[in-house]
Length: 150
Image (tube, rainbow, N blue to C red; front, top):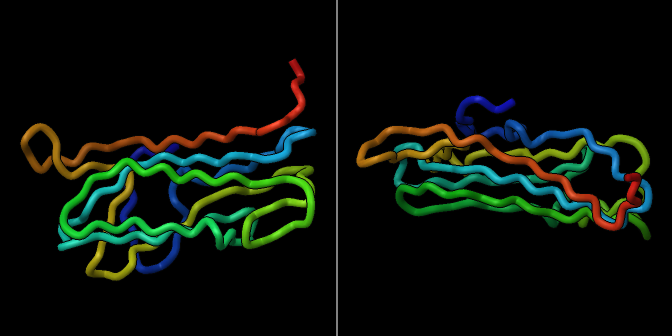
């Protein structure tokens, strides 16, 4: 449902298109969450974005990432995190003791400071000009070890 770029601010906000309610299949031992998106500078000397991953309302602190570039940049970023299922739950790693029912998975982001601005889902340059181009993000979930119901 993402149709335009996202401008970061110094306040955390959901990354557009990164939120999904998901129920792991019976027998799954892990879920791999992958979110691919582009980022570009916004006319500052550098850009820095901080990214946090959540399962429901709990931050998975081991998944924190920073994207930072000194000077202008355009990147395709791949946020990938594996959520183990089984054993003792651990908020830091995201391990779930069990997974029955829907859980909300999402990323939140903010720019590091007002002098290090970043845009998501866009490029800065295109075909020899400063011509921003929209780049749709992609979200993929993969259940690992789940039961086959085919």
